[in-house]
Amino acid sequence: MPAFPPREEGDFASLVPQEVLRRGLAYYKEGRVLRVYRVGEKVLGLVQGSAEVPYQVEVGPGLWGHCTCPYPEFPCKHAVALLYAYVEGKAPDLAPLIEALAPEEARGLLKGLALLPEVGLYLAEALAPKKAFLEGVKDLRRAFRLGGGEGEARALSLRLDRVGREEVEAYLEALLGAPFDPEPYLRIALERYLSLTPRLSFLLDLYLRYPSEALREAFLGVAGERGEEALQLLRGGDGLELKRALRAELLFRLGRVEEGLAALREGLEGVEDYLLLVERLVALGRVGEALRYAEEARDWFGKDPRLLPLLDLLVAHRGLPEDHRARFEVRPNLEDYLALKAKLGRGFFAERKALLRRVQDPVLLARIYLLEEDWKALDRLLRGAPLEAYPRLAEVLEERLPEEAKGLYREAARREVERGSRQAYRQARVLLERLSRLDPKAAKEAALALVLAYPRRPALKEELAPLLG
Image (cartoon, rainbow, N blue to C red; front, side):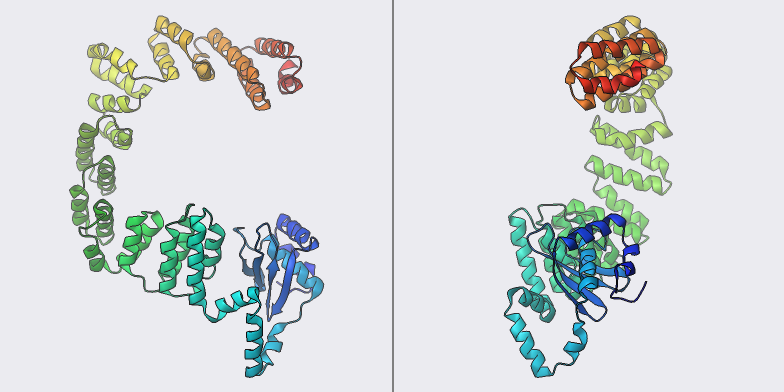
């Protein structure tokens, strides 16, 4: 890249995405750049964006820098606007002017600048960054109470490299009260915190109050280097279940596998506990043991849908009738229905009605009736099926019962047209296109009938035009 700061537009324009460049130029022309000045190789200033408070922008060599706006990439349109303002106005370099000041002159100048409210804030950040940061945390908490604060959180995250452990801890504590998802800001703050001799007890306390993935990984990362201290913290006390899961994971990371498994076995109370244990046993290649615990969970928790991963495991590795039956009760499906039919033989018909009563999805029932050629049951199903199920039912019937499928597609398309929106007309066209695969003539006739039925809907005619030929 050419020397920085830039001398003309060409020095930076090719390095900026075209849309960002265009919007930045528009901001400059609208007069949104309130201040621009140069210090050495950096261009700094204030740019008025959509927020009430102007954004603080800093751009250096390589177009590196930051802006207090919410845009996730850099340079943003505010940075581009600042660069346009600089190349047009060529602000003087303040660095040599500052270096030429005598100490007394410099102190006098700073005192005078401190009387200007907006400049005083910047000076406070520069001269007492820790105190200014803690004041910012107080403002952040107030903003959270009012339902906002994301802009304040973003601004503080940009200043984390200027403060120490106490200030970062205060920021992390405050983030737990955010009225929005604080995870992105937690990750940024934790990255800084982990470079400052972190306190395990502090990380654990935060995790027990707000069990996020970022806090979990931060604690485990530090705990891996201070194993015994961490294991001691994870004994007893409040948040026992969270502590037990952390303790087990830490033991595995420390290579103490049997102790980790023992910790998981101690906490076998809910479905999630069994899921963790079984997943770990499978990862260790101890499938037989995993199956025993999966079966135990199935017997304890019956029809809990969270059991599905364990029931899938039982079906995949054993496939006993009770495994298929348990999974079918939680999630009725064709695979388990056919497996039970094959494995139970004549005994299957004693429980067929009970199995079918579990099925709420008319499409699955239609598949079953088709396979068994139970035409009476299928007829009853189609006569009572809800209209919203017509498209999926038609797909199932296309091969074996094309006439019934065509009727369902026509009726579903008519229902969409009755809704009277452009999106509904498009969906009607999709349905009639499916009908066209079976019978192009019938699809054209259906489309024409709909257009004639609603002559004052030009959007309908426009959407169905491809079918009208």
